[in-house]
Image (cartoon, rainbow, N blue to C red; front, side, top):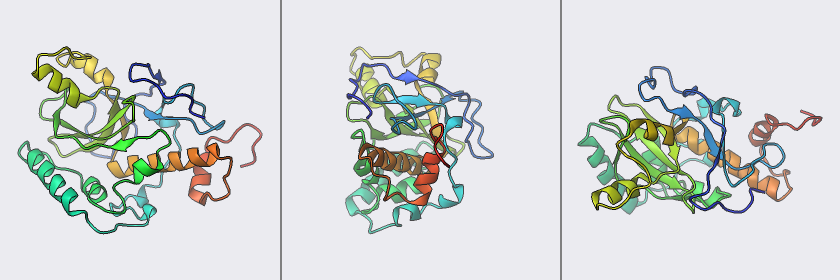
Amino acid sequence: MGGAMLTPTTPLTVIKGGPMPGARAGFDLSSVGFDSAWCATDLGEYRTCRYTYEFYPYESLPPLDSTQFTGVFQWLGGTGDPVPEQVTALDRLAEGLSARGLTLPRDFVTFQADSKLRYSLDEVSGTCCWTDISEPLPSPVEPGAFLVRFLRDQQDCVIWYLYLRSSGEAFVVHSSLDYEYEYEARRDGEETETDLDDPEEQRAAILWCAPSFEEFAHRFWIENRLWHALDGNDLSGLEPQLRDYLRHYALPGTPS
């Protein structure tokens, strides 16, 4: 239903929203100035998509029940056993961030270190997205802030990052740019795909999409579960929560 996979150079259809509407109270995001958009594929006839992905206005998305986001991922059945080598890798990442005055979000650490949870997004993805955690990458728009890549499309059409600020805020953004590659190319004297020293160009290349990692993961999981059900033309096994999400996009004349 999503169509043929895009190549990394194929432009996405951009339907951007305004400033980040879902930010938690107390967050000062105005200084960053990112636009907001949810990057995703279709939900059948309920929400169309001309290519593999489109950018949907954040304010057009179904609301989520924020009381579910407690950091223990009960909506995925709760946590399992920690993966020792992953705990070690995350500790090393956290140390690198701590040296910069930054902290990894607890929900992110819980998810990525857990044997039951860590590949949940890979397994449900309808577009073959996969987990790939980077080292801290400097924000190209805000001194002292850093990006940590955690999920990417198989052809790098879109890449998702944690955005970590020195004030303690952490939220999720996405971009078509692989900033690890961009910084390595500049370091090695190679041509980059973007001007890392142009803050306006970089601000336009990064879009806000969720106020926390768990909220991002939950919406991603819901939408990809729905994609598979719609692609298989079988909604019979959907939980009420997923049916409610789809009802937000009810087709004209469809009973609610």
